Length: 343
Ligand SMILES: NC(=O)c1ccc[n+]([C@@H]2O[C@H](COP(=O)([O-])OP(=O)(O)OC[C@H]3O[C@@H](n4cnc5c(N)ncnc54)[C@H](OP(=O)(O)O)[C@@H]3O)[C@@H](O)[C@H]2O)c1
Image 1: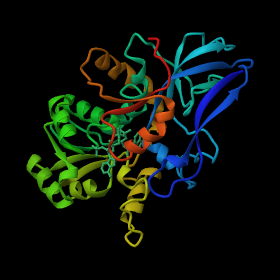
Image 2 (image 1 turned 30 degrees about the vertical axis):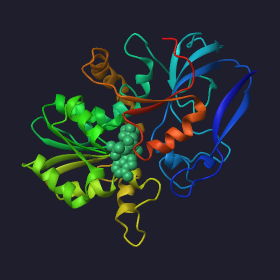
Image 3 (image 1 turned 120 degrees about the horizontal axis):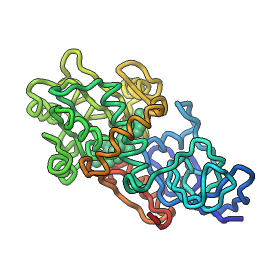
């Protein structure tokens, strides 16, 4: 038997999640059965979509049940194995959840080669956020060199990758991020041509700044946030422009949604129901993971793609880090170090 520390959903949030919505628990795991293996979690990924899983509403994925372990992608080490495909010491990634240990039968588990890049990148630039950026830019927005793109949440896990890939294509790249430090990092380190601080201005001023940074108009908007930034970008779009609706984080906790004014709900539906503008959910594109990793893995390995991470120490600090993430408290990919990294 192994005692696993885990974070469960204690209650559903009304608005922004609070500490009381989470519970730190210890649960006993059985010995791995035939074909199963025990994983010790090293890195846990915190992602905005987890806010949606806390609500009991129909979406593209089922909600976490009250008392259930919070859902999440993680990287871990195989400790005990009765599965011929996964040996002791293998580094693996899957949706293991907010837990220190998990038992798996290998379904939807991917082995990671630690010689390619640090293993935590399997949750960021070489994982779900990375492929989201790559698919959104290439498959959904069909972005082309010479065009102008605006990227919101520009320094985050998805946005920082979109910006760097767009720059490598030869696009004019304009970021929108929260705060002077993030904007300075976007231009100095990530290669953005401009980065505008949405916290420093209202939608009208932001729109004017975008027009100044993009005198030829905006061809592609990589949408991560909704709210004021969406409003500001809309009037800058060129005819025939494309919007890849990846996320709408400013509305995830219900803030800023006026029920008498249905646009936020319509916009959110474009994302979750994959309507044409074009919304997309990356699960539908995971078959491209191999192609993505072959193309982008070497760029991460040789440092051409910069990696920025925020690390919370210890599983017990995951709820606080998640609450911060929803307010822009993270700078780059938000991770939790759950246990020592042997690589
Ligand atoms: N469609 C898909 O399959 C898919 C897959 C992955 C992610 N996503 C979406 O992509 C977006 C980015 O995800 P991520 O993992 O890369 O997160 P992230 O950008 O690393 O972190 C979230 C960021 O959102 C920004 N933000 C938070 N509240 C905001 C507000 N009220 N207004 C404007 N910006 C706000 C903050 O950046 P600033 O401080 O810069 O404002 C914050 O750092 C999210 O909407 C997420 O749901 C979608």
